[in-house]
Length: 150
Image (cartoon, rainbow, N blue to C red; front, side):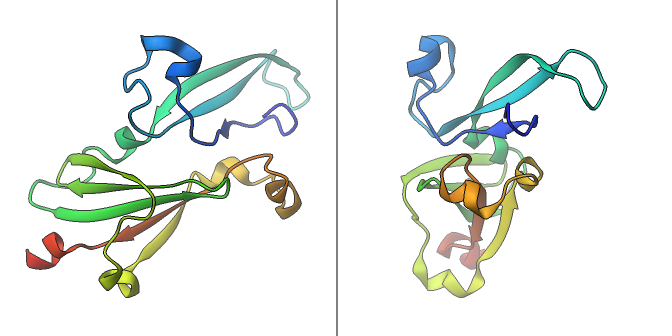
């Protein structure tokens, strides 16, 4: 964040280890830190005067994005730092399934992939990614038997 003067999203972590019980999940689900530099002024050459950190609870990102009755969407979050975790979306509700890629492999050929917050990583190159200086996130979206049944 300091080097590129841009917002950054950390690898997943247990935010309660940093912030105690002031965070909602207390380490029960994947969380990342969203870090934003705060600049002295609005000029292009402005120096960083401070930092803003927010706990990014991954499940909140997926809540309320589908209509009631649209059930059985599986989302697998994969990052370049080696983490994999899965959610099931049932209408506006989201359920954390656990660590790993937990979709039904019967639906492999129906996957849709998208980058998550790709704008955060525009200034990074492949060499920096290999060194682990940041994590890129991808979302893999699959149907399930529940969706197929409806």
